[in-house]
Image (cartoon, rainbow, N blue to C red):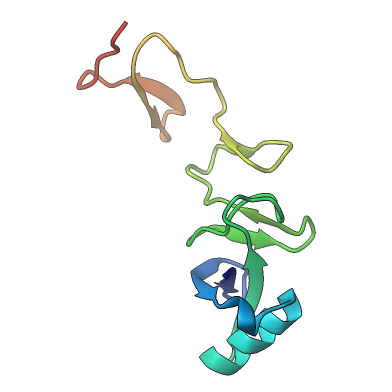
Length: 119
């Protein structure tokens, strides 16, 4: 089985479909099959383990053609992508002494009093 992501015109992932290997011995074959079966679209192969194109294509994420990589959805506007393209990093590291939630308007970590650490 092979996985193919459908992209919109801005390279955002709309959906991921599973295609039988009989229809896609190569990525090009799989794309041709998707175009025929779904009646068009923009398609890229993705791998569940992220072994190619850095990450698995998740709905709402984006394909970066310059890096030939799928990027997960950016959680907050202030967060930046890691050098290896695998993680979004907050402007300040999360404290580890308790549970915190990110507050984008103040760009700070706020203590989550509904959670407790088991230490």
